[in-house]
Image 1 (cartoon, rainbow, N blue to C red):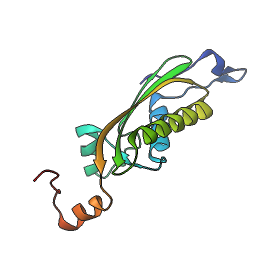
Image 2: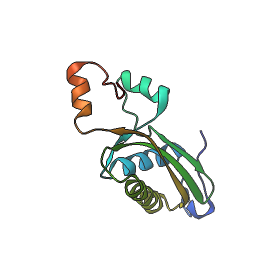
Image 3: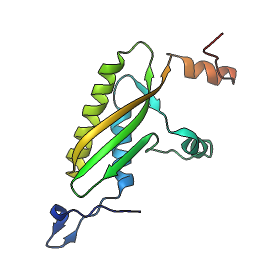
Length: 137
């Protein structure tokens, strides 16, 4: 586990270190705050963790962190009917603002990957039926 100890985070009393996992959690929470994002897409490993009852707040988030800068990739599921470019732009702005205001790191890029579109009520329908709704007939 790498920690961040940039020059500006050293004080008279010692240094401040922020783990990359913390930045992933900040980015994940900032992403799901955006209206139109219904969830995060994290692949097989995070799906297994959720099945085991562990809530993964950094699901679908990857970060690269340097001494003073960070780059973020988020994978999201968008609500059907929303304008994808507008939702993605809002995700970018919200993630950048959250990370910069909470950590002081300069966010150089936020890449948004749209992995799926979720229909309103689709989640409830799948839970009630206990099956996955086919999208193609």
